[in-house]
Image (cartoon, rainbow, N blue to C red; front, side, top):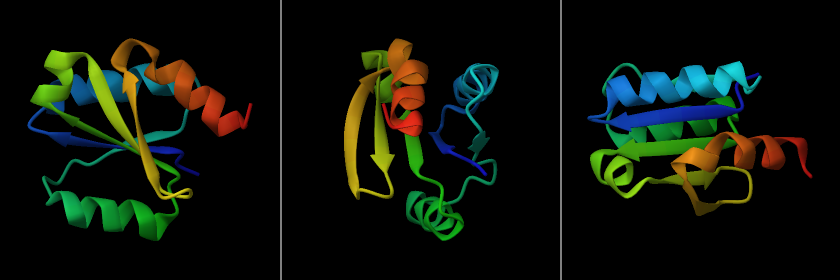
Length: 95
């Protein structure tokens, strides 16, 4: 089952790299490839029961942070891009 869904907002190349990085860590990651509107992408992730959605825009990359939506708890948190993999690993394993 997919654990993380990445929604790129004009950041497809960087988002693909991030997807690959997360997959290498053993995190089942999928990426929005159809340029859907944000709401439609979130609905899609929700329908599939994907627990974490990463929204990645140009501003986030410049700031070095990312917003992660926890679809189960219905909240979101900010995380440094460099720590995203370990933060998601921690959340997914429930530690």
